[in-house]
Image 1 (tube, one colour):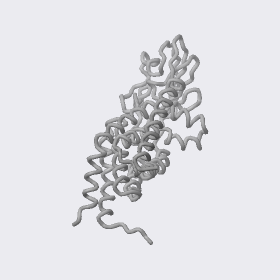
Image 2 (spheres, chains in turn brown, green; image 1 turned 90 degrees about the vertical axis):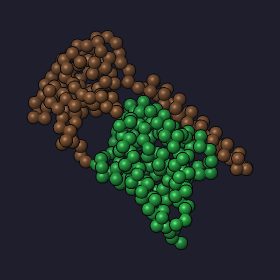
Image 3 (tube, rainbow over the protein chains, first blue to last red; image 1 turned 180 degrees about the vertical axis):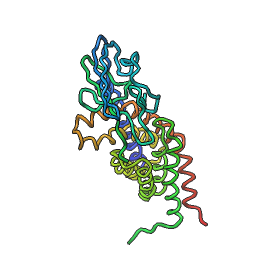
Image 4 (cartoon, rainbow over the protein chains, first blue to last red; image 1 turned 180 degrees about the horizontal axis):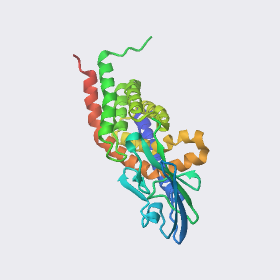
Length: 136
Length: 167
């Protein structure tokens, strides 16, 4: 095989793999990515503060995503960041970012995979906010 | 026989490593547009496998800057993998193919960083970690295409001049 055919072959393979991967990624996002659902939902949000006290909010909402669901109560405050809304304050307590602290949340006992503005909520969801610190 | 690293290359490779860290921090405000893929590809195209030196400098400094979290383990194989892939495809002379290659690498960055999660939470955790990041992988695809498409050729030309110049 001469050099030019070999190069064309490499080019073909790289472009074909790229095309397949991008189609697969987009398809997986639509198939398995977060989806909001319409309709009334009842949610429970527990906030564990750094002093150990826990505050519980019961919400009724027809919003599809967590941030919109709590917007009226104003439990969450944050800033728009590279990866969506970054929560800085929950129920009035701001995580001390200088000390490496940040707010985390679990949804039905599992660590959340999305930011609050892309996290879909379902009826009966139990959401828990707590402060964590970098172990760097 | 031991491969010698001439002083000239040693200096250029160290500076490339430092430049990768500095330029990454400078561009950090642009989501998923990063110069690391571009610079390490340049290093691999001009210096071959010696590009592992700037790569190692970059990984070590990032670890010191951000703390050795889970992401650090993925850096240990992702960036060397990039250099190895460039080296394997080194016969390629088409800039378009390098651009597509870099874009593809950006797209695969997410699934590659999901690998450590396989060991923590199995397939389901790694899969949901990957799916959650797909929009960012797509942005990384576009960002890399842009960076490498525009800058690879001039930078490689420049580095080759620096590498070959007799002094």
